[in-house]
Image 1 (spheres, rainbow, N blue to C red):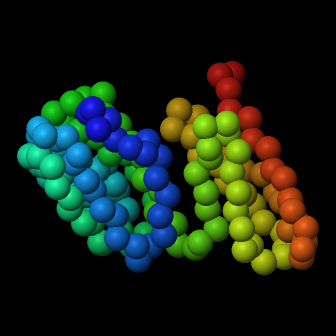
Image 2: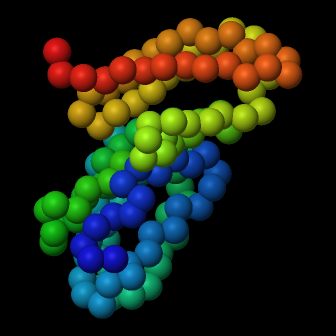
Length: 135
């Protein structure tokens, strides 16, 4: 609504259908800058939706509107179910991860990716903290 992509960051798993919906009464353009997945670039002239089904490779890519240059979003396509998008307060929750040692990667649109090592134990919660800031 109101010439904004919502949500600004979306995470999905390979095999899921991405449904792109225009809830405004006027023209938008959905232009992905995907490099590993097939890029898409199509007009949405008014209210309606369009499915995108061919996202088959891990990638985080930018989506823009060529009509309204301030419209910007990011889509993360994952090859596993262990991912999350942070809430407004920066917290996240990943459930169902089997016990073991993992490298957890966080991505932020301005700062890129950061990794932290985590150990998951059966029946116990684990915390991980990431800090992104200007150097």
